Length: 161
Figure 1: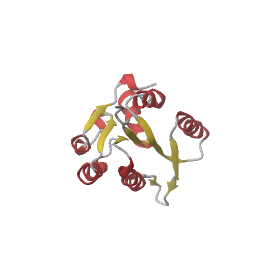
Figure 2: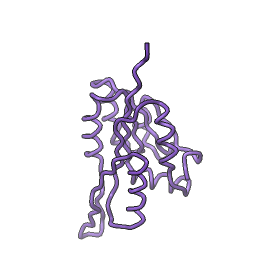
Figure 3: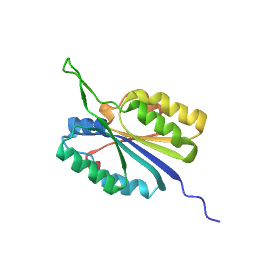
Figure 4: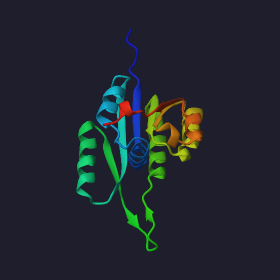
């Protein structure tokens, strides 16, 4: 008798991964390699990459590459405030999508170091009985997120382009 294949949902906080890998290693994350690795663990049934749209051509090429790999890219416009500060945060959108996915998957994979997601992972495990794996740069990932994840995977130079 065949065991059902594990259903996996991937959620990528693109800005967080971009800045943490740049700051820690000076190189970008290798999304193609990551996809290939995860696809060997089960069926990727949902894969969202959340990014900020600045209308920049190099970003558009990157977003197109993510789509080609298999991600659905969700964009939010970059907002420049009058005081010079900027707004571009996907935390609520990621949270809603993860909660919506929970009844349909066995595991969620989050690429982020943002500690705000710790409570979400606790909720997914305790209420929805969904396992969570987090990928992040260890020294730039909130301890609360590491503790809430069922599995934490430190991004290393081997995971980069």
